Length: 126
Image (cartoon, rainbow, N blue to C red; front, side):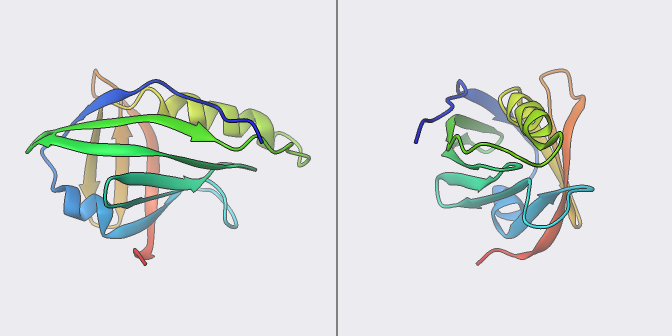
């Protein structure tokens, strides 16, 4: 099993990390058990299109986090364009510099504040 490693990045936020950690998240529009994200303690984990990914999240101060490095299993995707969509997802995850939580939505943002990924809550974290 090989691993994909994305470089670490800083995440700036005015949101409570507890809002982020308290939910299981799924990429808006994703189906089944794909493109998920969950934080437990100082660990980030989830599923891409075909592979599981994992990494570290460290809260530096009230508004700064470190995300990564992030690794992933490297299973072959056999379903249509799922491999390309997963590559795009992992690429955007590696660019995250900020986030916002509003109700049941989580937005992961770039350094300039552009929304890279939007997630919807799947309920309370387990």
